[in-house]
Image 1 (cartoon, helix red, strand yellow):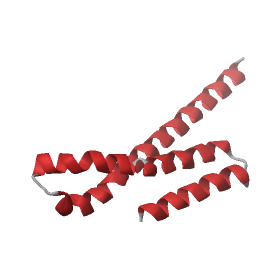
Image 2: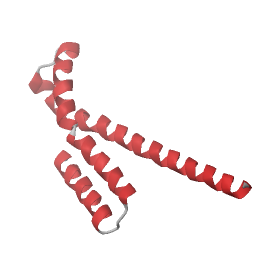
Image 3: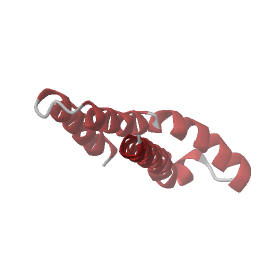
Image 4: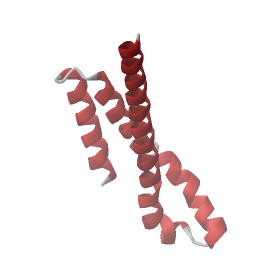
Length: 102
C-alpha cells in the first residue's frame, strides 16, 4: 500500500508540474511524497518505542507499526498543505481589501 501511494503521489507531482504547469500543486504533491518517504524513518523510531513502552517484540508489532509509520506523516503533511493554502488565501483577501480601499 505504501509503495502504491508513493508512486501515485510522485505521478501526481510530475503531472502537476510537467502537464498542468502548477507549481503550487506540485509542491503539495511532493510534500505528500516526502511524508511517505519518511515512513521508513518513522518506522525505525516507532519499533524500539513499541518494544520499550508496550513490551512488544519486533515481529509482533511490525504490522501495526508499519501502518502507523506513514499515516501520521501523511496527516501532518496534509495539515501543512491546508494551513499554507489558508495563509495564501488570507494574504490575497487582505491584498484585495487594501486595493479596494486605496
